Amino acid sequence: MFSILRATILTALVPAAVLCAPQKRATSAPKEPFQLYAYGKDIGGFPLFYNKGLAFAGNPDKSAANDSNAAVVSFVTGDNNAWVGSPVNKTTDWNNVTLFVPTNATQDTRVGFLPSSNGGNSSIETTGFSFYGNTGMVIKPDGTVEMLFTGLVIDAEIVQVYWNDTSSGQVPITLRSMAPSSPPPSVPATPLEPANPNA
Image (cartoon, rainbow, N blue to C red):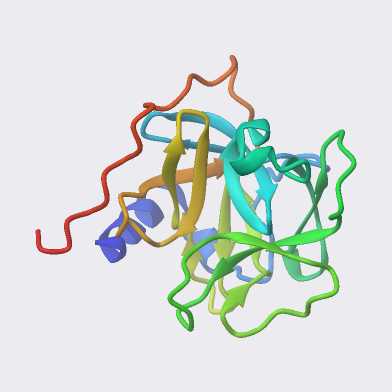
């Protein structure tokens, strides 16, 4: 399914010039620092936030147990096009964390943040992040462009961010640097039903 989705996205959104230039950042990157907002079916621009090392979109004040360290993230571009995040207008016990997406070497498909003290491993990718216009993507070393973010509705104000996974009812989302023109509405209060593995 996602190979079809990937091909569709590449054809519709990314010109051949981007695909042929893996070492260059796509044009029209936002001014830094920037924030990321999730858009998708019934997800109208929730801001990306950090919670216990994982990436969510929505209202951090509604996170599990009202974690005082959950906060919206502001990004700058680091070495090798890594996106390095810090909390927005909040004192937390984390700072300078690097956004990561999982690789094919792991079955854990959650998107998250790597502490600055952690050098990473083969199960995650922390480099190659870029933009086409305001839309975030990953450019692989071979020039392949991937935009495979998905979101799982946790409740009406929180969506957890995944990568290339719809197995639990996640829906495709895009991460954009453009905030919604008005506060995003809540997503349906009933979480999405997990996919039926026997379907």
